[in-house]
Every structure is written in C-alpha cells, then in structure tokens.
Length: 458
Image (cartoon, one colour):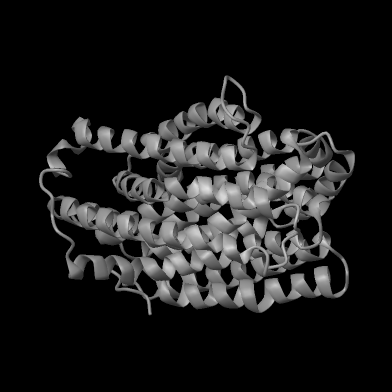
C-alpha cells in the first residue's frame, strides 16, 4: 500500500472525524436506549431484566437483516453524490422507502409469532412471560424503525449526519420517562414491567420516524432533491439493485449480531442470574461498539464518495486508513475503561451483588475483543463503500458461525464454563472476522486502477 501524503491524510482523518462524530453520538444514543431499558428493568427486578435480555435478543436478531439491507442506501447515495448525479438520488430514496416499509411489515409479522418459540428454545419458565410481553410491545414500532433507517441512511450518505445525533438523543427524552412510567406504573400508568418497556420503545420509534420525515420535507439542505415531490410506485429494477447490494450486508450484520444474540438466548437457558449478568455486560459492550460502528458508517460514505469521484486506489485506501486510525484510538479508550472500571460499571445496573459480580467478570472479556471488533467493523464498512458485499457475507458466516459459536457453545454449555465460555467464543469469532475482512479490503481495493472506478466486488 502506498503511503498517503501527510497533508492529504490529515485532511481525510479530519473529514472522517467530522462526519463520524454525529454518527457516533447517534449510535451512542441508541446504546443508551438499551442502557435505559436495562437499568429500568434491573431496578424493577432480576426477572424483568432477564426477560428484557431475551426479548431484546429475539427482537434484534431478525432486525439486523432489514437494518443491514438498508445500509446499501448510504453506499449508493454517496457514489451518486461523488459522481455528480444528485438528480438520481430522490428516485432511489423513494424506492428505499418502499423496501423499508415491506421489510418492516414482514418483521412485524415474524415477531408476532416468534414468541411461540420461547418454550421450545428452553428459555427459563420464569423469564418467558416478560419476554413475550416485551416482544409484543416493541413489534408495533418496527415499521417506523425501518422507515427511520431509510431516511437516516439517505442523510448520512449525503454527508449530513447531525439529524442522526439529534433524533437519537431526542428518542431518549421520550423513552426515559415513558419507559419508567409504563414499567413501574408511575404517573397513573398501569404497571407493565417488561411489556411496558417494549411499548415505550415502540412509541419512541414512531416519534423518531415522524420527526425525521418532517425534517427531510422541510429542510433547505434537501429541497433541491425533491425527495417527496411525488409518490412513485414500487419499481422492480431499483429495489432489486438495493437488495443486490444490501441483502448481503444485512446477512453479514445478522451473522455478527446473531452471534451475540444467540449467545444471550443460550445463556437464558442456564438461569436468571446468568441471563441478567450477560444482559448487563452485552449492553455495555454494545455501547462501546457504537463508536467504531459510527466511524465505519462514515468510512462507507467517504470510500463511496472517493469511488464516485474517481480518486483511484490511493484515494480509496486513504479514506479507509483514516477510519482505521480513528477506530484504533477509540478502541484503546474503550478497552482501558472496561479493564479498569468493570466492577463499577456493572454496579450501576443492579442492586443484586451476585449479578453485578458475574457481569463485572464478563466485562473483562469484553475488553479483550475491543480491538478485533473495531478492525472488523471498520473493514466491513470500507468494503460497503466499494459495494463489495457478497464475499464478506461468507467470510462473516465462517468467522462467527464456523468458529465463534461452536467454540462458545462447546466451552460454555458442553464443558460447563457457562457465560465465560460463551464469551471466549465471541472473542474468537471477532478475531477471525477482523483478519478476514481486513485482508479482503486490501485485496478488493488493490484491483482499483490508480485513477479509475471500481466495479462491484465478487
């Protein structure tokens, strides 16, 4: 790899950081939503916290597919913007909305029947009622969430990420009082426990989606695009293009997310204490992950823009390297925080000493995978900017399900190591993914001519 000039590289790092900062803040707000749910549930009771853990896992496992599929939008939009073809963006966006609505309705239907699987999956009988109520509540917000992602990814692809941050923290202002009121029965509301938290989350999702739609319709920044100038019917060709690029991303995201989520479900079979402790640890780890995830999304946009503008191999790699520098810096801070403050962080979630002790020990494992997690998500984001999505899907399947899950299940359940064994599997899967994804990016970007465009990865 050729070495970029210091001036150009500093400019790229600065541009990526400016683009990523609101995305990181927006993702942190999403992580804080999970933290709010977990803290409220933990103070309501250990059973409620365990139920929210299982219900959240059952919700996010299928949600990863539409969320990842819609990640095709920023990659395609940024390439159109870089190539000076902004007049084509609105038509693509309207088709993305149709796709988002269809995916949201499919997921609503799936979650309506998924609660029937809790007993066959062996989830602890004490956890099942609360998990079912949480899933029944949150499912009403799914169509809003998929539409929100379509709108958010459009804005992100056009280098305007501030709405992601503002609406993310705005959602917290809705969820915090409403979730508390519905969970505990405060302010004249009925006490609904885990179900109340699910319903509060659904209301928050609709508030965010409606606010984003109003912003896009009224903002001067987007006026020239004519995003809502007309109502286009669904069209096969652009939706097929979105699916061709995005569905492998959705499967890849689901492969990684599914590793964590199935781990939570398997731990849910062990008992309430283990499930509650895992929920605390995975919530903190997810919160840390939001930082490199935001940088990776910014890198997708910067790489895609470099491709569209015809900046060649050096420009594409410079965009990816800038993201990598930022991710390594943020992951260093996250690892230090988890190593030094694991017990203190765990104690914030629960008054149950046994749960807090186990959760604190799991956070030490989370500290160990900060670097491989950052490298793999940044490399995957750079590959999305190149629209190289099919091969990474198979690489993710091997890393997470060929290595991570068998090892974790073997250690955690087969050898009786419990949650700690499952977390060793998580570390192994992320480490293999980091090596494979980084190698794939170097190979794909190496095919780009010095000053020419790149075609879809195969």
